[in-house]
Image 1: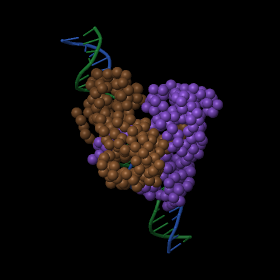
Image 2: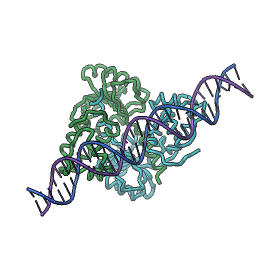
Image 3: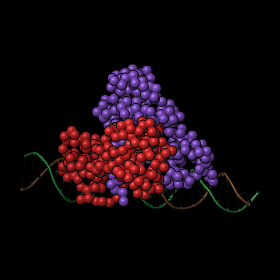
Image 4: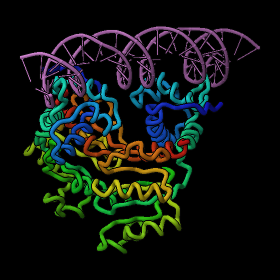
Length: 211
Length: 211
DNA sequence: ATATAATTGATAAAATATTGACAAACCGCC
DNA sequence: GGCGGTTTGTCAATATTTTATCAATTATAT
């Protein structure tokens, strides 16, 4: 049933969207759906959906379609949202605080256990039930709590140093909101970039070039 | 020199990254760069860079490379960051406030002129020098100020109604932080989605599937 | 002034991603 | 229990994107 082969990046990037869609259908109490109906709702082709899902195994049934509850659970497992990966936030400025309070980390497989900032004045302030710690305590905290993921919401100029430190401290994944370019220097590190200003400039281009 | 043809989405999505990189080189006082050197720094192939840039015209010179100042300016024009598109923010919760204060709208071609929220209690509070207005004032504000873009930082359940209202009010672009799926219902509308939880789940997948 | 090295822009080739088509399997009705 | 209609999983075809190659052009050193 499973085909633990290489999965292409475009497919991986679509999985979370399937997951969210199924989440919605599930909440509405819908039991099954065909690739055709799903394609109509999501604005994709049915062929693509079937091809994507088949990378991971045959979740559907001919003449019936896909069972939503089952498919939702399966994709969740594939994405690892059932995990509880210990996670720290670095940078408690406007953006960092918003990410901490806004994101449902636990529903996506993460467990936010620490918040750090280099600004002494913030130390002690609470975010989502966690105290902001001064960045100087990062080493000891990581030694004691072994976070596997760090969310980076700091200015670009501090990013290089922090990333090197985090890698040494055995952090395996970075959710990177900075502009700093984490290249292939760290082969064992997973990086997911969120470049908000790139997204904004893309919108700008689209605006200026729509018919 | 210009080739005002169709530009593929992958190319468009890379433009902002080129722009940011050139911004950095420029600040460091570097005058010229070859596609080869740039490729090394950005982690792309030189061939791709040359091909991408050539979609818009021959900015380089054989034996020399690209003049950074000129290329920076040209890509800026292509992206439209020299514009000042009047923009409103809808939703002044954690995320909305962070986006308003954190993003350099004016450096990316936008001008934030209004902030709205449905929470009466927030009304009057200031963000980035702008008062939070109650959403009921949206119609009049748009009539008087004609914003062309809206940043959407509201719960998914309110999104459909707001989008329809915005389109009627002649808004042409949406920077969408909600999970609401703006499909092809509005052909004249440009939409750029920022799905943070998709990004987070992608990281989760990568973590669970790295060698 | 000329030769050499560097580098682009363009074209061709290769790799990757998406879509179409259809046999096989299954549902559900009669 | 069989039959018509539905829908998947898979394979082949098409479309798109990326990479490699190279002639033409220019910079730079001597």
